[in-house]
Amino acid sequence: LTADKTPRQGPNKECNVIPRCQRKNTTALNHISSTSACVCFTERQNHARELVKDVDLSQWDALVIMSGDGLLHEVINGLLERPDWEEAIRTPLGILPGGSANALAASVHYYSGVSQVRGEELLVSCGFLLCRGLVSHMDLVSLHLSSGQRLFSFLSLAWGFVADVDMESEKYRHVGAARFTVGTLVRLASLRIYKGKLAYLPNGAAASLPGPPDALLPPLDQPPPSDWVLVPEEDFVLMLAMYQSHLAEDLLAGPDARLADGVIHLFYVTAGISRSALLRLFLAMEKGAHLDTNCQHLVHAKVRALRLEPGAGKGIITVDGEVVEYGPIQAEVHGGLGRVIGG
Image (tube, rainbow, N blue to C red; front, side):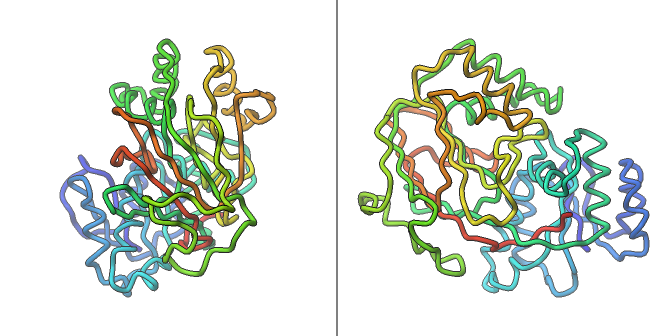
């Protein structure tokens, strides 16, 4: 067992993970108090990515991340950048929530079939699930940027309102998960319209080949194939592609999503929606009821691949809550490529 923790926790050192987790009130970990562990403290951005690229994984049964979703994003991409990526990505990953969004932790808890919880209760729940040690497959999504960079995602791709709120609310990080509520209200006060083109391959139109090679994506400089759906609208309020249930502890954005359902849950909201209607959508999303609002501007599709071409100008695109290069981007799901410890 190796545990990665976020910066500002101290220097790297080897020790038993249990006493440290007890001080974080993760009492569930008493059940594995005899586990041998190495605790690694990350000190900078992409430090976890570098660590997992070089470490001898054969000495560990699992990698546990105690952080937000950003550190897990680093770990997954580091594993897939290894020469032995096919074996490395089979390493079970555990998550203990330690950030402000904690989307995967909330998703893993949700899949266990118990009622939604937040904060310390979520931390304890994930600790118990970690103790159970049940390993499940998890979908990963490969993304291609216009620069040629390729990266992998486990959670989401966002453009427009959601991406703006995520990044602009960083200044409110001191209030924890409530920063997203504050950021939403601020952005609603000055609602933007985002021009772009969106296309996708519906679920069932084709089957992805095993492994990371992208079988469904054409080059970005070529038009989408004929079996793709071209969204007629070009004025959007947001585009959100989800592969897990939660976007944050209190946002059940993809209630029908599962760890390895093999699809991307694509949501987009077209221009013309009122501020009040958009607010109602996000309030309903807390309980996963946004699709029941019958909002004519909200579209949901289950897809295997997609392409987004934002219009000219500046903007924000996020992957797993991390900012990436702004420009054309396309994505393809790889069903069950990863492994996660959950219920």
